[in-house]
Length: 300
Image 1: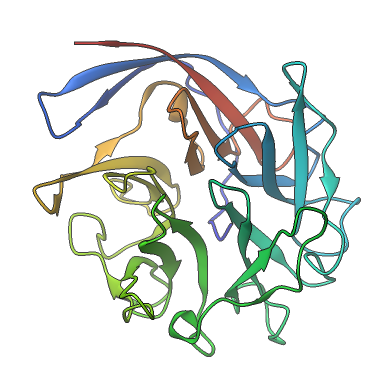
Image 2: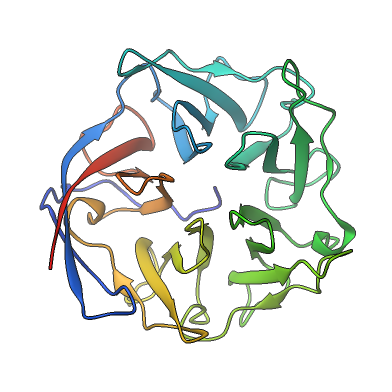
C-alpha cells in the first residue's frame, strides 16, 4: 500500500455510518470493531486484506521478519471462527522485492498484486501482476496486461467486479499534479481491455485517491483519499454509489472507520456483513494493523 505516514493519535470508536445507496439516504450501523490480533498483525505493516466469496481465506500484505524482503503477501484461514496464524506465500508469489496490495477474485482462482520485481527502483516503481491457482499451487506471476503497464510510473491496487468486466486500479500515470494518484478504470471489450481512463470527479479530486474496493455488482466504490484534509497528510475511507451511470458525491466513512491517523485499504466482504481496513491508529500492534467491523443492521 502506497500511503503517507504521520504520527499516531487517539482512535475514534463510534459506530454509526451515513451512506447513500442511490435511494433515500439510509443508516447502516456497524459495531464490534476489533483489531485482528497477533495471529494476523505484526510489529510492522499489515495492510490490504482481500477475500474470495467464501470469506474463509484472507490474503494481505505485510512487512515483517517472516517475509522474504520488503512487502510480502501472507495468507490466513478461518478456523472455528478464528484466523489462523498468517504464513507467507512461497515463491514464485513472493520475492526479495516488494509484493503488495493483493486482490483475489471471488472464485479464488486469480491473485492480482503489485510488485517492483522487474524494476530496479523503489516500491513506487510497481506494476500489476497476476497468478492463477490450479488447486494445489500458484502459477508463475505474469504482468497482467500491457495496457496496465506504464514504464517508470506506478500501477497498483487492482480490483475487479464479479463479472470480470470492469478493472479498477490506482495509478500515477495521469497525475493532476506531481506525486498525485488517481483511480483508473478499464472495460473488457470481449477480446481485450480498453485503454484505462481516470474516473471523473467526484471520484478523483486531484489529490491522492488510491486502493479502490468495488462491490461485486460494481455499483459501490470505496477508496482512500486525502480529500478534506487541508494539510494533505492523512487519508480516510470514502464511499461512492453509481446512480444512473454517474458516481455520487463522496461520503466519508465515519464511526469506527475514522481516526486522526491513516485509515485506508477498504475491503467489504462479498456478503456485505464485514468491513475490513488498515489503520495506523493508536492502540495497534505495529506500524499499521488490519481491523474489522461487523454490520449490525440497516435502519430504514
